[in-house]
Length: 179
Image (cartoon, rainbow, N blue to C red; front, top):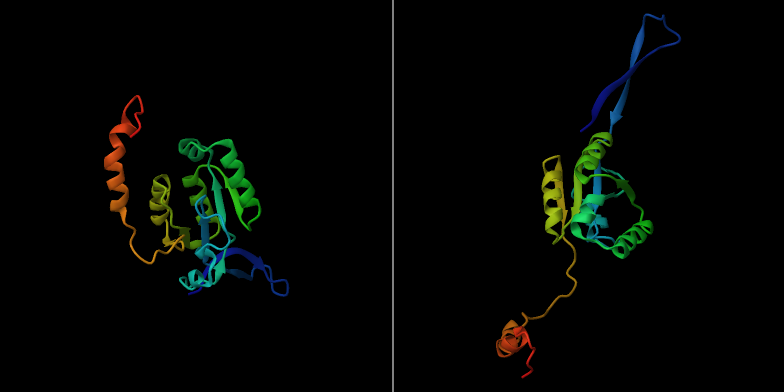
């Protein structure tokens, strides 16, 4: 689907000054990948061709990371972790934007004519509110990560609890009595 809007009117030099034409510019609807600290690797499924097939639009903007100092302060990230995040981002083809996540994403969506937004799945509850906010701004696709480990069978969790039931009194006692 083509979307057009009038940008400006330009006179045609060979015609009279009273005649003018409209310069029509095609607005390309774009896709945007928003990264967060739980998906800082190029092998993440968000960069796969399978993800790109989820959208009808062929224009993909450069992935973005929003550096929100308030978010990092609330998360309690240490200086070393922030350095690690920044150094990892510097090795990736990502634009880093500084500011409040909600404000920056609204500006990006408006400025770049974004219609589809792709965000990696995260277990981080602080990012859930941001993802919920973004989902109200446009079509949002949450991309699951590959499993870190695939187990052939369900682990026997009862084994740990049998052990814990034997040692919990000693482990939780103030003097640390050993069994």
